[in-house]
Length: 447
Ligand code: SF4
Image (cartoon, rainbow, N blue to C red; front, top):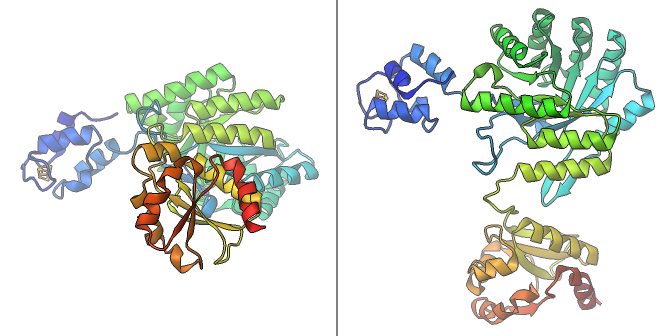
């Protein structure tokens, strides 16, 4: 449980030496209790106090990295119940279930569905992140063969090995040893053997229990063996149970600092009806699931779930934006046109898409306007003649192109004079007002 400020104070040196940056030990203790300071700031705290306080000041939901390399995903670390308080941090991981009873062609197709699932949406790469292999057959050899196949065909994809049989677990976890896989199916009955297997293969422990009380007891038991990285399944499968359990777990971890439930949650939402499955998966994304296991990954479903996840995990107080830079569209040459716009993600996405449609290679100068669209940025004084001129000068584009012509959005035609005044030797051309007129505009110039 979380310690109060006074409880923390009792563990500090009480010398009021101020080395932590606070006037007194008590003031520092109060900040620690509110998680607004780090214990490292006090150089004189005893080792024993460090141990107690370190545990008490750990994040309420343990941060865990699942997988390794570029496709590793982070889970946990959430600090709020509602995204308007402060953004949600680590997006829900989508995992596609592959059963060892499925036909070879189905298995191949499912692996391919995961490997090819990546899409670029408003500048972010979104995909089905993981594969969950399940030992439906009960046959350890069959399960191991599936594990080998997945490891070979999707070597970078983080994997959940799901079985309650220590024999099958031992056989199938091998190809993922040392890759931060999840060994799911650790129950009260098999915990001793399964935890050993997970430890030997540096896997995250996937705890499975029937109900929240049993789950708390199980995570405590697993933790007592020295395991820190756990993901939890409360056994909830019905939508109403998922909502209830996920919410209870998040509240217990954040509001009561209840450590036994302070781990990322895994939800199994597989349904025969894919549309219904998408709906339940959406519930998991919206309400606190760190992993959602699906039975299929059709493109339509992916798009709906990716979009929902992206929206839930963006900061509602900050507009979505892309990096300020000169983007190359196609393979532009020094004679290719230079177009400018703002860095609101949607603006960038639409404009760059239309320039691609034009099939006229071009440079797209995307200027940082704090994520505002063109007209809003102009009205807010962030997309002005002098700011545009500075950006163009500092971007280095003058060294890449032979001409000195800048195409600006039609809605801010009024800026032409101010830009030409600040950008000596440049000509400003007013482009179309709407991005969908860009292809015709660019093609007519190239003709
Ligand atoms: S550095 Fe440590 S001992 Fe000194 S005031 Fe801060 S908490 Fe107290």
